[in-house]
Image 1 (cartoon, rainbow, N blue to C red):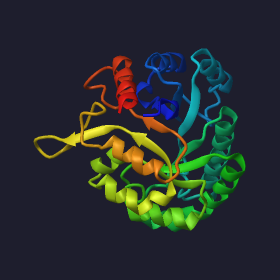
Image 2 (cartoon, rainbow, N blue to C red):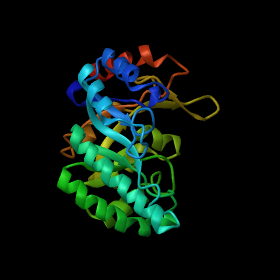
Image 3 (cartoon, helix red, strand yellow):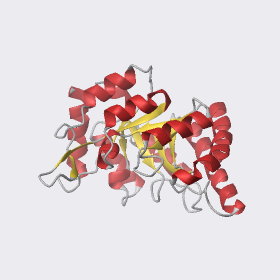
Image 4 (cartoon, helix red, strand yellow):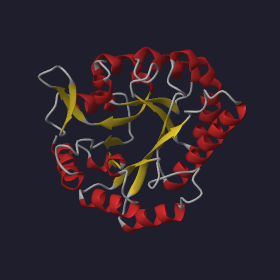
Amino acid sequence: MDISRVSACTFPLKETDLGYTFQVIAEAGFKKVDLLARMPHFSVTDPEYRLDELHRVCETYDLQVANIGAYCGRDFSAETQEERDAAMDEMRKTLEVAKEFGAKSIRVTPGNGKRAVLDGLVPYFKESAELAEKLGVYMGIENHGTEISGDPEACLEISEKVGSKYFGILYEPCNLMQAGVEYKPAFEVFKDHIVHVHIKDGNYNAEGKWERTMLGDGVIDVGWVWEQVEGLGYDRDYALEFEVGNIEPVETGYQKWFETWRDL
């Protein structure tokens, strides 16, 4: 598999500082990160966050930001105009920082995730998409299991209503399975709107409950995902999201995931 287009999510190291986080990811073999938009990793709203420190660690560990795992848009469904305006300001700032660091995409959030707010979100995402297109940065709603993000038909609906190739879906097969949605049929529903991809693995245990596994040990057909997404003409990155610290520490596990991806 193409290792030049794979990144590591910083989420499994969310409690550690940027320096240690980037060191672990670099030592595992990665050249790119999918940067979690939570302190201490990233923020455009916390006055204590310093972009110059992000520049420094990127240079120190020779890592590039491929995607910002932001939560922009979560207050597009807020009750007050002040809150919605602040959410739009957060979106603008995040898109601009993504451009500054060469990130190809950012994750966005469909308000409170309720289907009832979908139409109200559209004007805000349309406005965001205009800036995203100017900057050349894609925005994707991750399949996180809400009434919008976890429902393929709702994902299609909001993508079509926003109507921009710079807005769409962050395809996450494992999250879909955890929400009880088969990832292959879901792909067929919203495939024309996929802007980014997260990869992890899982399987059903003896009680029928979905559990995450080491990459390659579950039922997610990563090769199928690659072939289908590449068949769309997709030319951006795939982020590996190590969320199995209960199985192995990320400090050793991420290298195994990188090698599994490389050898597929």
